[in-house]
Length: 93
Image 1 (tube, rainbow, N blue to C red):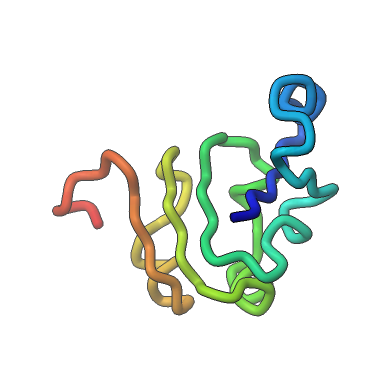
Image 2 (spheres, helix red, strand yellow):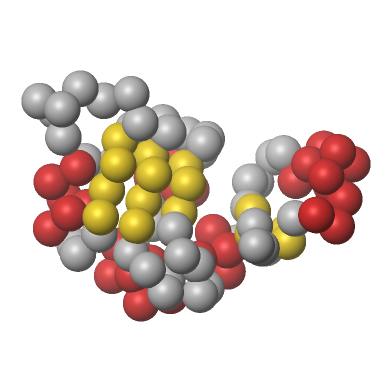
């Protein structure tokens, strides 16, 4: 299994801790190329502003696990993604 990561601030520390066990991407879009899923674990504005159409075209499987609940479930599902808002109540999506 390959795990590609991108974080505008944490990459240097991640490299120190995880070394070559992760693939480090220069952009969020680069990390999505051929991805089976996206896991959001940070709230950087860079990730809030991504274009869902571009994201979907890059990914092998349009699945998002949103650990920070930065995306609107209806909007993401409307763009053709399977969406899981981690910690969200089922009434909110």
